[in-house]
Length: 147
Image (cartoon, rainbow, N blue to C red):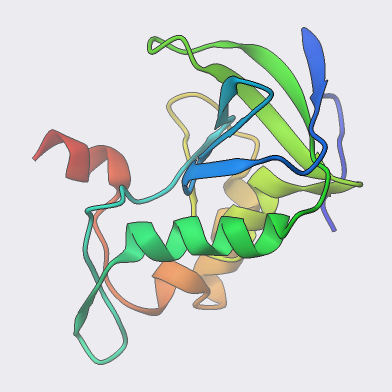
């Protein structure tokens, strides 16, 4: 489990299961779009290679991982501020489970070092254990977006 530690939040938003998963690192509820803090997942149109060197829609897989994790649970997000697209930036939880950390540790997100060092250990673990994206080949989402 990943627990909240030293998270400084400006506000707390609680959802009562009416959650829309936009992509692997963005959710929407209570008319607010929240970008998950400190992580980056493949884009919906992004392709990666699996263990058989076949293309698969890794952005879709990351989104499905988040959908399956949330699975009608109530989530709480601690909001840190806004990004350049005016989305709220948040660390989100199901009870005490840090969703951001879970996505990285399960290999469906990368630690977004440009903005945070919070999830580097989870990324190292996922890579070592060949979790999610780490089972094959992929381009980091921030590099893929620049293509």
